[in-house]
Amino acid sequence: YSKMKPFLWEKLKEKLFFSTEDVANAAGGTGESANVLCSRYGKKGTFIKLKKNFYILEQIWERYTQLEFFKIANFLQVPSYISCMSALSYYGITTQIQRNWYESISLRRSAKFEAKGTVFNYYKIRKEFYFGFLKEENFFIATREKAFLDAVYLHSFGKYPLDLSSIDVNSFDNETIVRLTEPYPQRTQQKIKEICRI
Image (cartoon, rainbow, N blue to C red):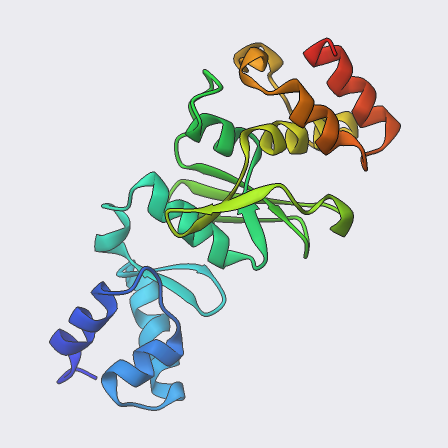
């Protein structure tokens, strides 16, 4: 691997994130030697490990934009989409600025991944509530109304801290909100009606 290092570096720099398989393929080595390399560079801080077999180059990490972190969030847990305050902040609907904090809705499980002061939070919801998102700039994100609904739904069951005073509720389309809330529990529907005065 030492001979391949410059070439390996160039290959990995092209990737948003990489696995041990990517390292093995780029360097022409075995999976075992790639594991050793990833472990060594992980301890040195050259590779940032977000979860098992999910790495990012430290020097690239520092240059990533919010949109690139959104893409990473989508891949860290599949399927998932950016939602709640992260999406509302992206749309400019909340005064709450979230730096290094990315919230997503997931079908699999609630989870949290952390690295270098950056947090990726995932909230699990039921399959029938997993809708209302779109693909934008190569990542999946909730529509503005659905991001709000996800946050209120989780909040209504004590699973999410929601600062309502920071959200411009007048920017939502009430007809869309009413339509989206139809499959949700009565508690969530009631909370939405109170907040949006509909």
